[in-house]
Length: 344
Image 1 (cartoon, rainbow, N blue to C red):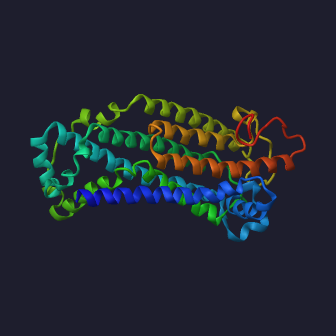
Image 2 (image 1 turned 30 degrees about the vertical axis):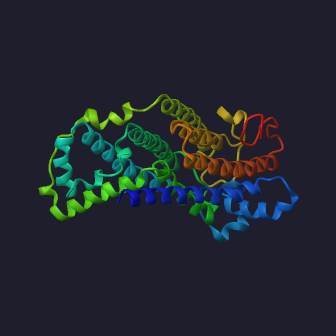
Image 3 (image 1 turned 180 degrees about the vertical axis):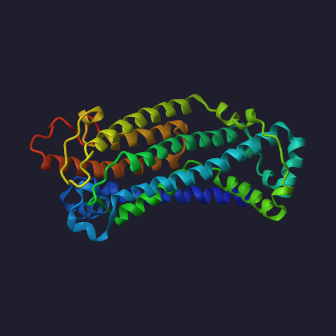
């Protein structure tokens, strides 16, 4: 079983990495400044366009931009589920290590045997517990991000009735917010899955009344957060930095359309990072996911590839947005860059 579990973990990690590479590669090619690739660039960009940079003639394969809300509902539900399962698994593993005799009976009652915990010894090692703790922390950061985005999509943004996005962009968003949470815990997702499945099966077989009621040790429950290393807190600080600026930039964008729901006119935004770039909310998103990379210890290739996809996708859209601003407004600030201050 241990070998089978390892193969499942390896397969999931390999699949996620392959998917991130496959999703990023076309965007990277489209970013290459070559006239020979102009047709391909327009093809890829056509799928990424939304809102003001999407021409009305492209509405045939589009959906309302307000459906962005679906992304954050999906992300919140999926992240919460994975967070709860992973945290419960971490708590159970910690209890097994600290109280082996007591927990053996608890595990036997809950799961019909301790087989779920008879995995490779590394699964209870300090390093393994540390990786699980990092995943829990990343889930918490992800929850903070998607909850704010959900709030903003409902109460801050005043989407124009004519604002659309390409259907492929909508599907990409659903894929992104499904793949991100699982990427944050892919190295032990199969363990957590088997653990959760065993508990569910036991609940179905024995019922609620026969499940063993145990007193929760809250110190052990929050113990995973006590195991975090310095880089996780630095990563969290980076996430908070990007989080705050994205919140401010979204508030600025939202304020531009106050009391103008029926108007298709656009106004040049000013303030915060808008002083430097045309799409500071995209820059903040890149900063946020860079914080995820740092918080994970910069050692997880899957999270690096996730960040790479985020960068490539947002740079592509930001470049087109910048061109749109320059074309739309004669007095648009010429000292602004597209997404990276003083660089691009």
